[in-house]
Image (cartoon, rainbow, N blue to C red; front, side, top):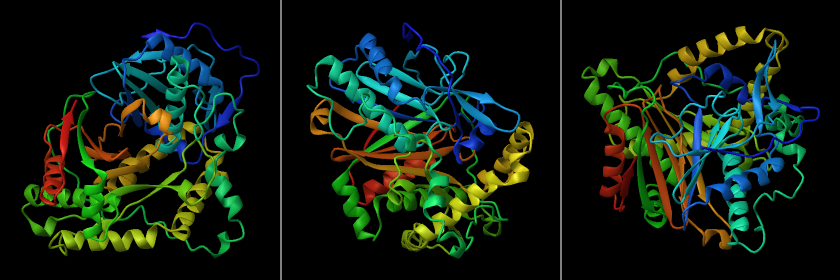
Length: 439
């Protein structure tokens, strides 16, 4: 473990409000629910750890909203500037472990290194997948520049020499409401997250606490797109449909009585930056949860048709804006705002356990194709994306495309692998060549 040598001088210790999505995470974080996700880049050569630590310090001023500690006020949690030395961590056998502030100098993210690989693990309170990836791009670009592999800082990557844009750390959802203030009154409320009937959950023997298993499947982009096109689906929809099919098969095996079948709900995050070009570096994603009734599904075509129709109706500005309105209205409610934070945390935990997590059977998050400037791409051999331990669903799936391949990372906290086995076997049956690896 390496630390930076000096603290950044503190002046007035600036602080930041939690964004609309981040407000739930202090209440939900625990040894079982780490709410940590991870990105990594594998370079062509072994990492010089001392130089990487210098690169971390060089980019630090450009991301002040990431170099913070979590504080608790009377009404809300908030983020305060953290001037402690940065730490460079060695790799762990199990990614996305809990971030203990005592051991991490109060930082809410950590950088790990192993041979040629640089990995960054973020507590979700700081950012989402898009924001985390932008930080990793900048860090790796700075490291390569200091190493002499790049002659200049590449275009299209956040430059450490630039001044942070205030829009990067504002609440992007509140900004959306400001942008759409003339439309809001005409938007009907469509939020259907909390439904009365809970969904199917996989049952199985759990791994010991802290053990997190990853199975990665690498597939050609061209092959996967060709298979998706044959079924009239996008790549995300294809993988989500196969995930649902796997869960249905598990339910049929675990529940012999058809009268006790429960719907399968699939959580699919949606990056709001594709609809609103706001340079947000915090959380700026919503999610949709299509549901599938096993009593009316006969084959994969049924799943594909239900999913395709659902996504067409719900991945649109009107529906997502309605969700944003509800989220912001809840956090801005006068009664809630003036309720002590310890009561808020108790209510959030209760609703999450009884309503929130009860609505989905699995999660699939597709970051899409990640593109780097050519001079960086020549130095970065591989990339990966992982979600944290899925204690409520036992499995989750993170997807990322780089160069001409797509990486499908399944994480699990159960001993058995029925979902992964089914999905990758079905991809092979559909014509894909799948290369599997595991931690």
